[in-house]
Structures are given as structure tokens and as C-alpha cells.
Amino acid sequence: MNFICSLLLTVALTLWQSAFAVPQSESAEDTVNNLHAELLLAMQLPEKTSVAKRIETLKPVIEASFDFTTIARIILGDSWPTLSNEQRSVFQDTLQRLSVATYADHFSKFSGEKFLVTKVNDKKQLTIVDTRLIPVNDSVDDKSISMRYLLTQKDDRWQIINVIAQGVSDLALKQAEYAYVIKKDGFQGLVSQLNDKIVNLQ
Amino acid sequence: MSLNNGRIKGLLGGLCLLLMAGCASTSNNSNGDPHESMNRKIYAFNDKLDKSFVEPVAKKYVAVTPKVVRKGITNFFDNVSSLNTMTNDLLQAKGLDFAKSTGRFVVNSTIGIGGLFDPATSMGLVQKKEDLGQTLGRWGADEGAYLTIPLMGPSSYRDIGSPVMGVFTNPLTYLAAVVTIPASLVSAVNTRANLLDATRMVDQAALDPYAFVREAWRQQREYVIYDGNPPGDEFDDYIEGEGDAAILRIY
Image 1 (cartoon, each protein chain N blue to C red):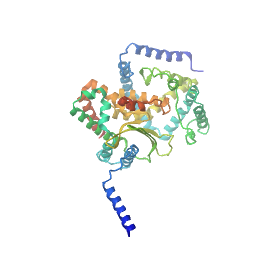
Image 2 (spheres, chains in turn green, blue):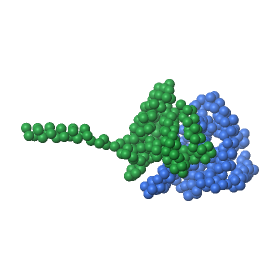
Image 3 (cartoon, chains in turn purple, yellow):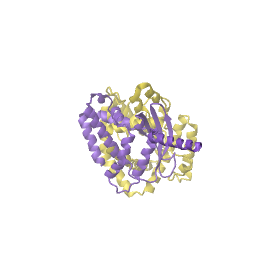
Image 4 (cartoon, rainbow over the protein chains, first blue to last red):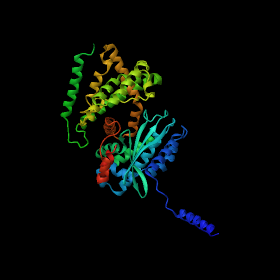
């Protein structure tokens, strides 16, 4: 009887503890795998699916997976300190909408592709997750595309701050382009042109 | 032998003139593009020529040529360029890569019927392109200033010799002009056709296509010079507080 009571108490305590347990934070690899899983789902939507529907499908995972505050700051570099809080917020929101629209446009067809994590390089503040997008013929070496993700941890969540596809950094591309556009057309000009891009993608 | 000294001198002379013209219009430029003003003008010229003439020809070519035929043509010209890859593998002291490139060339030239087919890939001998610019980079040569070459596109001080070496190592160069010229035109149109999706992406995605192409090209060059594993301790730079700059450089 004592044994049964002890057992019941142990089980009860375990259940009670798990009800209040802090959920284990996802690893950086989990963040990337979740993103890839959603991208594959979006790619497998019927061909006639509207862009709006694809955007609606991808919006939650893109917003959760990417640290757009940090990305926005890095992209604008020296211009960032000169912006008001409202301007920073506008730019970050525009960047977010552009990213969702771009992913919805790029990942819109499926031919049997799959993603494969090949290496995870963990440091305290930064993790690099190396992956490959493998086309139909299942060969890692042939036409597969390397995609490297840089993630940092904020509030117990790992979020992506840069994607490097076949050696080309998305952040570096945007920084170079936007620096020129801000110099030529100012901040409003940049935001206006980004909004035009979003409309074209949709 | 139809390749004569006159053609070589003309090609080298033209390249020298370009470099000298570039020297006349430099500026202080922190993004490794001291000839940006000239480069942008040449980019605009190339883009206009492409949109007006080359791209429409490439689209027509895609429309009338079955995919299997285009694939065969791509395979043929890729095979022909293998000699350039093999030469640069040797110059980079990459013995294993040289053996693989040679094996690939032999297999595709024989079983692949003159390079029209690519059985080598299914044997594990995947295509890998090397050129003079990559060789110089591998041995420590810095990229130097970025250049936009008329009709040819992105390059740099280090990479400007790559097409020249490509001409010398291409066996088609040594055939009669009646073969070389049409072959070059077919190769150019086929290459442009293969890039239609990429250029569509640039047109769609880029706010500043010139900067987009420049940065993408430069980063890709570093990537291929080090075969996808560039050296460096940018990772450690981030940890030591260089933060944003390191993130941009971690490729």
C-alpha cells in the first residue's frame, strides 16, 4: 500500500510539474527545419493558388523565424541612427512584407525537392546552420544549392539574421543596394520603391 | 591554324584600353568599386543591348529549341571548357580535382558522344568550373577594383584575364573561322537562355540592379575560389564584438 501511494504521489508530482514547466526552447536547427517544412508545404499548394493565399500561408513562419529588427538595423548600417523610431518601424514592417512576398514568389512550385541540414556550428551568441536544397535526383553534390543560415538567440528563441545562398549573402546584397537608393532618393524614396516591389510580387 | 596574332593582339589591346579608361575615372569609394561611375554607364549600356537584342533572341531560341537539344548544346560547350578547368586545377595544385576533371572530360567526350551527353555526372564526376581568376585568387591575389566589361559583364582586375585564357584553352578557337564564329554565337545565345530565370529574378528583386549584380558576383567569386569553404575567422570577429560587419562577411 505504501508503495502504491508513493508511486501515485510520484506520478501526481510529475504531472503537476509538467503542467507548469517552461517549454524547452527550440534549437537553431529547429527554427530552420520549421521554416523549411512550411516552405515545402507552400511549394506543394496547387499551382493555381493565389499569391495572397501563399503569403497568408508563409507569413506566420517567416515572422517567427526571422529577427527583422536586427536585420533592418544591419541593412541600413550608418543610416539607422539617423532615423526616427517611426521611420525604423516603417522600414522594418516594409522589409518584413517584402520578405514574405519574396518567399511566396520564389517557393511556389514543387518538383520533389527536399532540404537537408548538413552541419550545425554552435557558438554562444551565434549559430550557423548549413543546409542544402536538393532537387529531384536526390544527389547532394550535383545541382543541390547550399543555403547557410545565421541565427542569434533572443528571449530564448533562435531567429535568423542572414541567409547565404551559394555564397551570396542576402544582407550584403540589400545593404549595398539600399545604401545607394537612400543616397539618391532618400529614406522615403527607398520605402516607396520597396512598396512598389511588394506590389509587383503580389 | 586560323587563330592569328592579330586577333590576340586586338583582344589584349582592347582590354588594356579598358583598364586605362578606368584609371581616368576613379574616385574614393569605400565599397571596392572606385570605377563605379564608369561601371554604371557600361552596365546601363550592356543592359540596354541585352534587353533590346540578346534577351529577345534567347527567348526565341528557347521557344523553338526543344529542352533536350538545349541541354545537349550546354553539355557540349561545358565539355569543351573542361580543358580550361583542367589547366587551372593543375595551376592550383589540385591533383584530385585535375584527375576528376580529366576523367569527366574523357567520359563525356567518348561515352557522351563528343560531349553532347553527360554520363560523367551519374558516375560521381560532377562539373566544377575553374578559371584563371580563381587560380590567382587561390594563390592570394586580391580581387582589386570591380569592373564592368562591355558586352561581357562583371569582372575585376584579378579576373579580367579569365576569358582570355578561356579562349586559348578552347579547342574550338583553333578551328576555321567558319566553324568558330557560328559556334561562339550559339554558345552565347545558349548561355543567355540558361540565364533567363536568373535575370528575371534580378529584375524582380533588385532595387539597384547594378549593385545587386556587383555584390552577388563578388561574393560568388569568393565562394568558388575556395570551393564553398572560404577561410577566415569572421565567426570569431562576431564574438569579439565586430558584430554587424562580421555577419555581412560570414559566407
